Image (cartoon, rainbow, N blue to C red; front, side, top):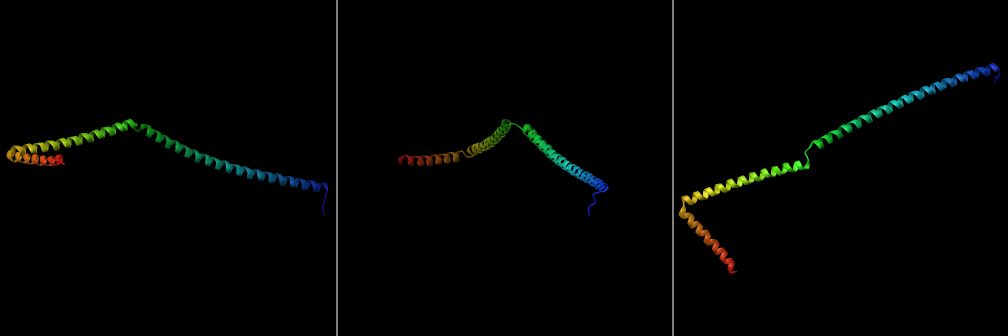
Amino acid sequence: MFNFSKDNVEQTTDRLAQQSDQAIEDIAAQVKTTANDLLEAVQDTADTTQDKAKELIRTLKTNIDRLTNEESASSIASKLSSGASRVKDHVQEEFNETYNSLKDRTADTVHDHPLGTVLVAAGVGLLLGYLLGNKRRD
């Protein structure tokens, strides 16, 4: 059954050595392929991470530039104050125009109807006197 002759043992040993060498080469090739695949995956991940980091840095730089280029709070407050001052000046101008218009119309009315104006003024004076006089008596 078993042939333990020297030649047979040597042949079997050589065959086993060749098979083990081939198995080692196959395993080494598989390890090398797997290592290369892993290295490529790591490089791809590193490249992707690097790209994302670069994009985040660009966004951060853009935001910093935007924030540093924007006007300071005191400059904004100054602009708001200037705008409020312009609004105040506009309202005051409108008020002055309305006041002057009413004053001119009143002067024209007094000039055109002096007697009627005196009678209206007297009537308003009597009415005010009556109203104020009643409050004093209470």
